[in-house]
Amino acid sequence: MLKHLKSYGFVAAAAAVVLSGCSSHDITPDAVVLEQKQKQDYANNFVKHYGTIDANQTWDFTSNKVRLGTRAASDEILIETVDGLDWGVEETVDENNKYTYTLTKNLDLYNDVPKKLPEKVRHTGESAILVAPSNDFYIYPISCQGAWSHDFCIKVGDADPVKVYHKFWSDYSKPYVNGMATNYSIKDSTLNVSRRAEMPGVHIYAPTGTPVEIYLDKLNNGNAPLASTVTGSAIVLKADAKPEGVPLNENSIVEYIGIEDQYDYDFDYNDMVLCVVGNPDTPPTEKIEDEKYTVNTNVTKRYMIEDLGATDDFDFNDIVVDVTENVTYTHHRTYKTNEAGERTEITDIITNTAKSQKAVIRHLGGTLPFTLKIGNTTISDVAPQLDVDVNISKNISGWNPDTNNISIQVEQTSGAVFTVQFPKAGEAPMIIAVDPDQQWMPERQSVPNSWFYLPE
Image (cartoon, rainbow, N blue to C red):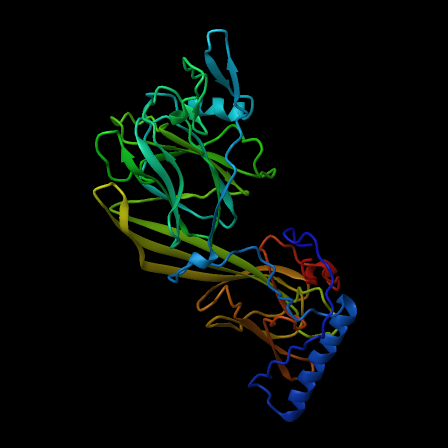
């Protein structure tokens, strides 16, 4: 069973039949009739084995997200604020009316930060951009103790920047959690609200490779505004503690991002500290030089193919081929700031794209001669073999991971040549796409029913 398909129900609908035209090798009327009958028999047997196919059932079961191209992707981006970290702050007052605030939750996380980013200990950061992984992730502000007020902002791809919170105090003598200094006391019974700020978390889901920029905006030391400090004045560190009370799975990766706010440039990178939680992966960084950076994306799909040698065989192992696309995007970023220190006229354009594609045939499980076409590339020099693992690598071009433009032509024992294409929704499939870690089935062992059911 595909590990990313958890709960499936059954939806009844009329079965559709894959009726792609026969190849140019044999276009006689008898060959057309034979191909249509063979595919109709296959579709009937598929429905008999797995049940009626829902008209909306698709056959790409990969977990890859839509790749980032030159098109705008803002409609595919999710940025939402969520509850910030819960520190369980308890307030106490003594006989002298002295207030003390104590943490009762997330202590491991809070104590780990000064170990990683101690005060006045210099670190070497770099100008960088975050890059969205193939999964969603969360960013939680942990503390901010820099001297200057600021807005903490996040910009994901082409979506509008999101202001997460506004810090408006200037005392950096204490570290703050969710806007409150720990063990900070005041002389009267009135809570000093200038020491507080709501610091929510942010949930981000974007196409793989989407640039994610974090920055402090409207920096002000009480005298004059400064230009924004971007992700470039930051350092990323592995965390030894995991936050409590937030979405986590056993494989979740946790990292810290420490940001320098430019106050006397002490480079301890603890003026603003973020906790990044990956589900499971955290976003990698790409270095920015001269306002340019590159983003590398990778997508791999495993195609499992039936060659129609039998109409009741659903092991999908006659051809198993992994197809990979690697793309490097070069970005050029520009922005201006106004007199208030606010960023204006932000642009981020892709100035160059370098792409390479490769196919690796992993397994052969059929005896019929075939020609495999992927994108613009035709592979016709691979001999059929029954139940043999192979690693035959071919450079290809023109493959579209979004449309799955892959097909085969198979010479049947009758001499006719049938064409099998990636199926449309609702059709009985002879090709399916899965993640590259999905193992193929043994000979004549049908794939599980759960692969072909729609989510409830």
